Length: 145
Image 1 (spheres, rainbow, N blue to C red):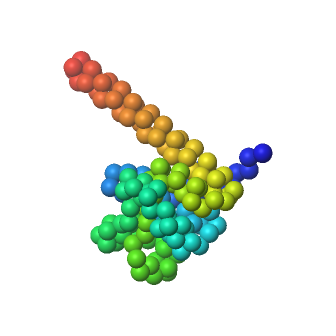
Image 2: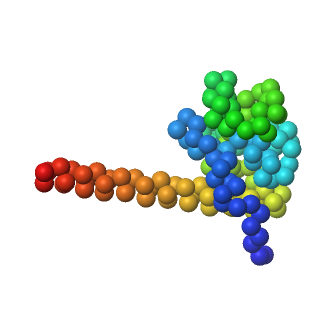
Image 3: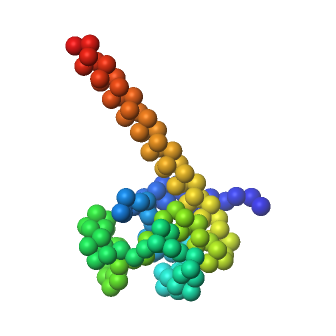
């Protein structure tokens, strides 16, 4: 089966947020990527809650939701007049979604999302290595002067 890029890495990356110190994706963003209604995605998750422990998926508190809305601040996000805080999915939760949505598109999009999470993790690791090297260089320079 030939791989077709359904969504770009950039499209996925811009939909990953850091909440509670964890990289997550919003239910409505995932639904848009999978081309299903958010309501359908939530129904599938609720029917299979045993597959989504708190480290896979959680609902935002009202405070977290307000903070997220202020960070995103796009007309489309605000126009939706969301009544309830969204479900957010960690990398593991996103992986589990393909098993409850059961569509070829969900599987292919999930593969791309997993690759994006991996790329981001590698970039963070490289940044930490660079930061450590810079700190060591700074210490060495400070000692020389």
